[in-house]
Image (cartoon, rainbow, N blue to C red; front, side, top):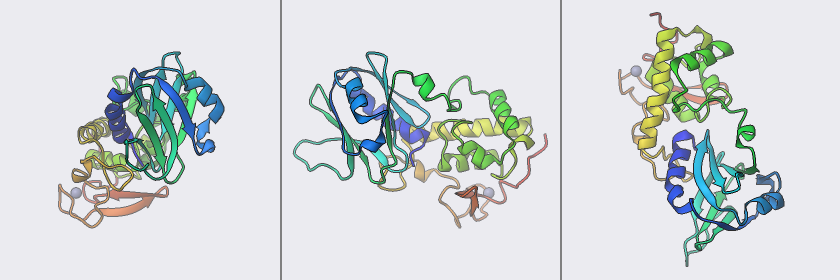
Length: 271
Ligand SMILES: [Zn+2]
């Protein structure tokens, strides 16, 4: 599933071709993925100009010239593609946007979990999302507060979009490794040093992954190079890049999890 760095890469790549363009038609072949309804979304966006393309958590946000917003969530297998003249349409096209310069943007989604949502109130539509980890306001003190409040295991807590926005399975595993923390440690057991390390680790891994254009693991998201730089995710049985101990795959809160049993030694460290 695309996480913050992959969605950020898609936004940066699509932005020059979308901003300033007017939407002249919108169609969906799978009505159930459009909210509030397909006709309402079409009425709201057709004729509008796209003034900005941004990201909130794992949502791609089209900002429109009347103040409305169209949100696209790729979920498990969604992707945006451009129709290419003279070439057959790719498989699994669920929605299309025609633009005033003749371009056609496609939303392809093999597994149909993706969502397209129109809203006039972006803040209300995203009110249940936690803070953006790369924004200035996300300080070690803020992270510490979120961790102390929750009293949950670190892995499921970091995956919870209402706590921190944008992290998924890959970057949670990578951040916990960088911070030297076992994923089952309870969030309220961390001391200040642990919290500072985890804060730095989350930011470092997301910034590196954005520079690498995200992680390409299968056909759903091509074009990134972060897979070459991953330290634990998907490396079960391979030697830890720091200490040589084989990386172990665990199952924590129903999610495949990768750790170095030596570098992430299971207890919050003092000091
Ligand atoms: Zn190690």
